[in-house]
Length: 344
Picture 1 (cartoon, helix red, strand yellow):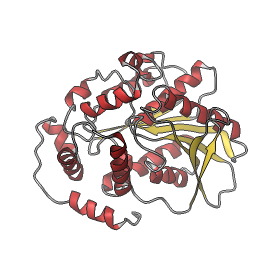
Picture 2 (cartoon, helix red, strand yellow):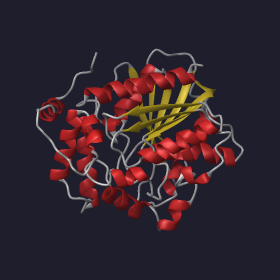
Picture 3 (cartoon, rainbow, N blue to C red):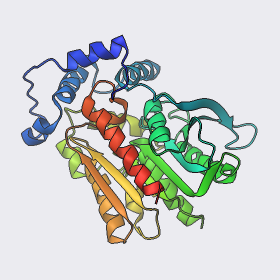
Picture 4 (tube, rainbow, N blue to C red):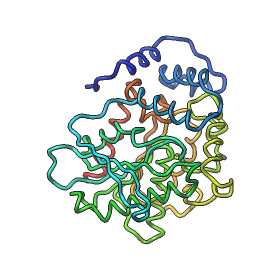
């Protein structure tokens, strides 16, 4: 059963469901027609209402918070949620986190570290809040979502270091939180998905144990932005080349940093010894090809890898489950896939 939606979500959902003939010559016709009709409408509305790149950072952050609030499904009931801070870099540097744990679960549960999307520039603990509650309820698991430092106030590698510090904290506190240390996962979508991949590589570099699962949803696996999918989907979609360039200019100190393995895990080579993976991709996504290649490299290295592709859904669909039924279904499928991996 679908959760109840607010009046704003119902209005936006009705608008997106309006049957209109939409043509977009910027995308290959076959790929464009594969998208959910509501997604095509959303792309058209986005192109009409926003400039190619944001003109005011804080205004863009506010508008995207509103979009996520309207598009998201409701938080799943039966999950206890509380905010906290943890000393990621000592007493002078606190990292905001949000815990999710199913109520009336007294036994030790799997633990999932989740990192939200937003190009390392936008997003917060509310961005993927409903999906985190879904993970907690459906796996079931104790989910820790982090609000890593954003650029341009804190450029690369600040966000990546926050993600790694949060996972180290989760390892240390697992028993105190009634989490099974042997059933941990690192997860995220888009920028956060790239951070999940990089975190596993950094764990291996430091000789630390791998988690049971890395869950990367339409991840940013290569910040050099040189893939064929970037050329195919440079314009027309919700995520496009001008916006990716805008993110990169604010996140990185310069193009040279995009070649570093931490920023672009696909560039690191040596894919053996990493955690089993679930890698999900979206349709008409500029980040599609690098994510697919990363999954293929893991498979060639004999790493158990599940590949899920959603051609009818766009980049960012985790935050669209309240207005696009197919996105809601995909969120449930991803939670079920995580459950299968963590319950083994």
